[in-house]
Amino acid sequence: MADTWAAFELWLGEHWPDGLKDLCPPATDDELKNLEAILGVSLPPDFVDFLKMHNGQKGSAGGLFDNSEFLSTTAIIEQWMVWKDLLDSGDFEGIKSEPQAGVRDDWWNAKWIPFTHNGGGDHYCLDLAPGLAGTEGQIITMWHDMGTRSVEARTFKLWFTQYVDAVIAGNYVYSEDFGGLIDVDYA
Image (cartoon, helix red, strand yellow):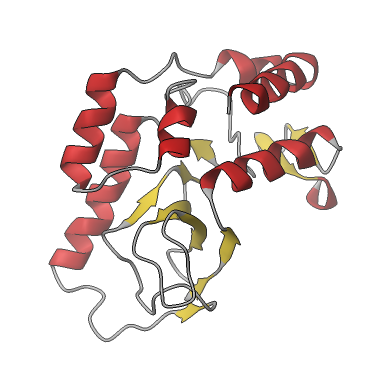
């Protein structure tokens, strides 16, 4: 995880210095324990290692991951609580999603842990309650207004490594119009 972060930080320093400056210091053990306690889960070690490098973004530079903000432990809790409150109030009863194989047919699940946010209610999530063909800890997309739920990677480490490799390869660029890193096809 450290090598991937180092490569990403180097790229950010050369191509989007404000994005690099927007990264927060590492998450503390207390912040990570609090996150797990509130969410009622044990986080995958690769995700914990990721947060021990940087605990999210400050939120002033724009979206680091496909134009989505990298959430801190506090922001993960805040976003998760919004969805948990909606779930607990019955807002999703009878609503079905369109999940890819390996993802549960839920609109939202309390064991889907958002770690990015695009400002419109959409997230990349750690899926800690996968469907039958899924893998615990896989990364899925969660859209607030569309039922599509797709598996983006089988592990967090794989998702992060593939993303950073794509950024370094030139498949993502900083866009002032969008205010973050976006797929080069949309630039």
